[in-house]
Image (tube, one colour):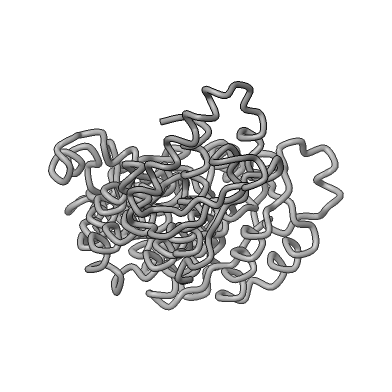
Length: 400
């Protein structure tokens, strides 16, 4: 097809797709062949090229897709003034493309059975109808979303059990590495919002318990870990256990404080300070804690004295507050409350901090919503006023 004619017809089809996305009937869709609307037509340099363009437009008219309005002052069929859309389906067939309304309709058929369980899919389909991408995907990527639904549903059906990501991928898709390419749609399904801040794939998979290898539960404190029938004292600076091996905790009567931290660097720094905190217990979440990690966390919370304080310290960004939200929900299940530590720092301490960035509006909104859920008033106010993200490792290690 002549490139100028093809460009004009595709523009017409895109306008029809946009009208469909707005639930309009598509009447009165046209395109003027002016230097503003279609500069390529005005730039045609030879009679032969213009004739080729007109010939392809006439073929589309013969197929019932468009009507052509000619400029009579330029002679018989020498200059096009405007083309009018007559039949959007005929135009799509003539161009040999799947129009957006058909692609979205097919996607809706695949995703329809999952709309009740995952209402965010309605937002996804609505975005596609408008011609907007969702995390870089369009209706042609519906298979990826279908796989993502299957992954999330499978993982949620497990009870505090980690899932080997490549084994699950092979079972569900026939490709052992396919699921690792689905972090974007999985993230949207988990967060339940199309506009939710993008998260690191590792945090997304950790939240579901999708792991390449079992996580390690790192703990430092003056207590004992029950592994099967044995009680293992933590007499080293810290010990690591597979979560599945831990059945409980003992000798917790003297614990006055439990602190979880998001990042490994901070964990090691605080372990070095714990000699001066004999009544404190320290845990490393490994970023977003997995379901198996949260099971052990609940066991520990139920073993602590009622008066022991429970704290969390993580990054000041949307991901950090989502981790805190998960921990607070775990604590709530066993009647405990999590307070945040160092997540509303003195601004003067940030003057020398280089690892900070501006928070996007969507991140600020999410943080405010999560803080309101748990009455974390000081961090919410801090984020609302300063609107900057700060990595945990950039702040001096400190205990509550």
